[in-house]
Image (cartoon, rainbow, N blue to C red; front, side, top):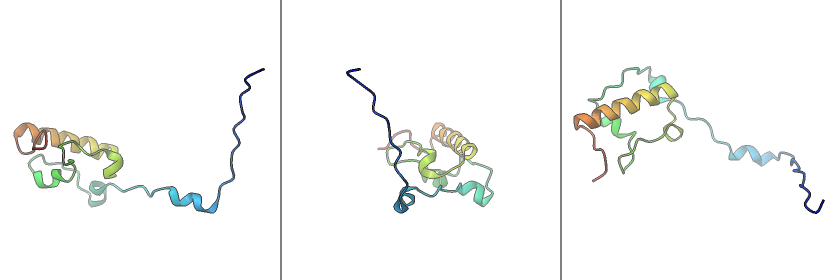
Length: 89
């Protein structure tokens, strides 16, 4: 009984709480109805690679799951063909 667990108290929501939430980004590819991810289009794929050469995650780009998967495959193909760098430099 020396160490009793404290109960967590839920606080009431305030009016300013909604300001912290972010609007979900929409998928650019689904909005434009682009379903062909061409590994040869290096200029478009460069938008989804960081300055260090990493693939930018879905939570940053706002892509849907399917489009992010296809995009990652296209970037990896483009890297193996030598159109995009593996690392920055």
